[in-house]
Image (cartoon, rainbow, N blue to C red):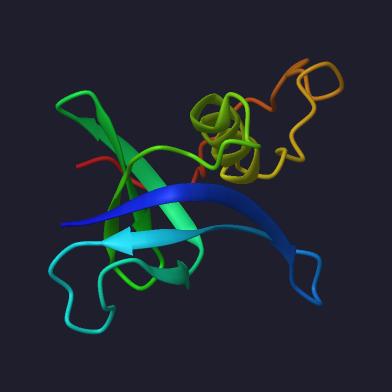
Length: 118
């Protein structure tokens, strides 16, 4: 699995107003597409998990990166990344209003007199 060092978070917006979170940094690993120490920008981050005390991020294209040391200018980078992902990945608010949508009664079911019981 590739490791990203000197990484920082980039927040990008699409024309439609969608917020995307990407990471750029120096990649180290065995991926032949990237010579070691190449500077890359990931596709949008879709999730993360922790493995052996290291944060692993997953991208929209299916790549996974272990986050190494962040860029020195990025204080609390990992915590900020987790917080931003939580905000971006939140579902849009429901249109259901629990205060105004209270059940106050319901019509009694009326039996059709033409229906016969068997």
